[in-house]
Length: 427
Length: 75
Image (cartoon, rainbow over all chains, first blue to last red; front, side, top):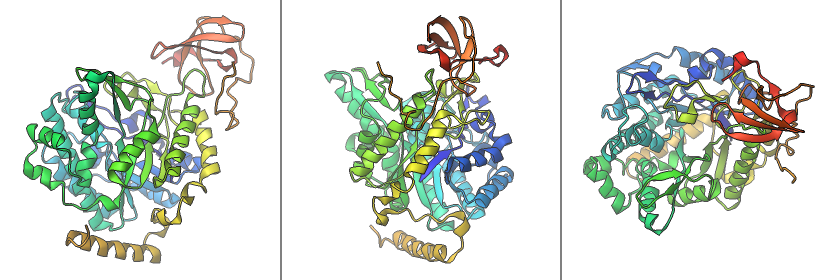
């Protein structure tokens, strides 16, 4: 799978008074047909994409599908395969923020309603980058509730992951062969000196919390104490252990230049730049979860020489091949996003209108050097990536084949498998 | 020193292919796309010293990659 995405972050900032909407900033609401043209022009068939949650989920059990209906009909007509991103860093005004314990239940219903309305959609990222969403909203004080304590972080985390788990279950009711590509930021914390090893180890354990809970993997005793000391109850923890959803999942890991950090003895962190790189960090995540892997986000801004993003693309691709050739089942790669973004240079905390030149296309929809490079890379390598083994081919049903014999057989088999899972017959 | 770039692999040519006088104080972009924007601080031979208008980072680049930007389009 070669993919890109339409960036659809929607956090609220400035104590909830300002809504950031990246699909508005990038012009996607006006230019969505053109954007889908560009996806096809790239030779891409897989698109990370989702309707804006804050306007589509209009109230409890109330949905406004107007934009989703027209855009998803067009994707289906083009036989493009969306990886549907239902929640990207924000919630509707009426829900408030990620501290709201009702959010998971509203989101579960929303996911079910979406999956039943668009039954030809098979690939989902229910909640994008759960760890980043929780830490930026609940610990760094940047987005949404702007919490700054361990307790607000743990509250956001448990609500976000619970929402994701409930959404996966709800989607599987409508689409038994759904596949969840759980895009999550892959991080690493480097100790600056021996005194920093302890704080770094804690952060390196904390980075796994979202996926541990999501996949029902028991956390370390240290993290268990951390969760319970900061408001998670035993019952809330045990909720995450028994859903048996992991084998419907692909481990999507995102990697940027900013994903590695230096840790000082007092626990403070700062950017480390690329030290280990994507391959090493992905191996760490794969060793922990043993799931097929997809590189689900990367980019870098185009700089003064014009080829900075081209070189980064090549480097990321070389890392993907390294991981794959080391035996990790690797199913895809993503340059994120299709167009330039706006204000990510301040992590969306400020509304300066700064254009971040990191898309395959600029905001005038003119192709960038990295876009031309990705186009060529896809053409050159598209036959090679799936050749690791035919047994690891992702069982994707393209929109044009939805409802066909192959799909009906696959869906029937998956329905039986899900029945066995929920009756305790599958470990 | 040879400046290696994978742009070679993809046969991407980054140079401007039309004549244009670039001088100190000009607002330029360094490729065909709209952003990023730079201010030219100095010109010496075939090189330009430029400053990114958003993050103030300085770079020395090939002069023939610079294209003038109309000031009303400045970031």
